[in-house]
Length: 188
Image (cartoon, rainbow, N blue to C red; front, side):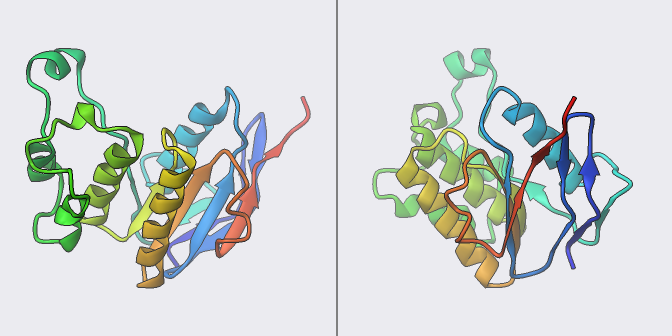
């Protein structure tokens, strides 16, 4: 068992109990809207062990596949290249560290800030997967085809013994996961 959730309750919502085991992918449907980012960050911190919660037991650490960010100053004057990003953030001994180069037009000298949503997201996903196969991720900033590609990659990792929690605003993957959990709104 990777994570045991006995139920997460706040003033506004409730996440029902679930467990996450190796070889499983849990889709947490958070619904879209103004609350999504705040709810996602709250849950990410709990599932990755940054915030303790009395009803969540973490048996094995999870890592959030962070989106790429850099300061405006760095973005303008010294933009990060794909090669530099991987050198600083990836486990270079992992095959995932070079997987982004399978996209034929991406090379070490491409500036990360010039990548569109899906290739940029794949870069950070591969970087995370180069270090762990237990991840928390989202599909924010991707077009529908990119989201499908990202989910397919994570699903392959999970089938090889990894585990994943997808924090999602849509319910399209309801029938393509091990467990599907919906956030429940509490009446005020």
